[in-house]
Length: 427
Image (cartoon, rainbow, N blue to C red; front, side):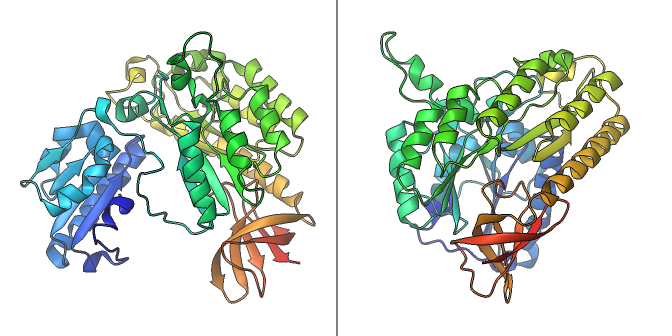
């Protein structure tokens, strides 16, 4: 949306009190995201009374999911744009709709970006590179297919053009993303004749982008156990600039719960996968996401999961409690877990992971790593990330340095370890 607005003459202000237009882009994946989005809307809507705001727009997944019901409950909002309408933002602002107008195109028309899609990156050192939109899975707890539609992949040629542009613009890390990145290219393959070999796949995409510049990190997020095969693992191993970082949300390990979730693997599949990654790439960083409190989860199911993370010892792990809603398939399942029990399980799980993370961080002390410097906190103190730390979701490196440069790589010797973060000094 910034890429659409900037050429049209709009400028950004960091102070909402000075803004003529306020746009809130929302998430509605889980209940806490819905609550956070609504709280932000209500807080910023006050600037229509106390500030300069004349137009107040809400975009993204919240209006896509709740549609007219949301418009009725938020009369402060001048226009709503669903997930498929981001490219209409300039039109809405230059030709204001009637009060309460709700712009919600059908999901079938949701556009996928191309290298020609204008964009204004919000960071200076790394850039997200979306390669797919939508998801073909039917996980019973997930609303994403309803909000984003079916899987649609960009071609490798189109992605490569954008990647070259981003690298030439000075970005030192490209983060490959999609709602289901591991399935990249499957929809393109289904449109090919039976005698044509599949050319568009995540391993081939990573190879093509990695070859553009050996001085740029390539990272991919949001994989899946059933698409992280040996070919993908060996592709990562074969290229030094592809981060040996595997973000594989497993959600659970109990075979019974996985079946209820609509996930097509079991605990033994997961153990084999993580063993194989570490066999091929011994120093690979493993990240996962886990859900506790899914309908039907028993104490035994939870214990299986707790034992599993102590066995695999993930470098990074995020957990959240099951979020129920009437528009989810899982809503109709039996055995809903009381919130208090789910929260207790979440605390136990994250406490165990905190111990694992702290111990793993201690092992980094004395080692020297290339670090992408991202921010200067104060004189001679910077922050950055190693290749085993993804932006926004993992820990960071605090860097003591007199001459580090934001947006560049620096060799950093790790001197101290915190629970999730590290501290070091440039050489």
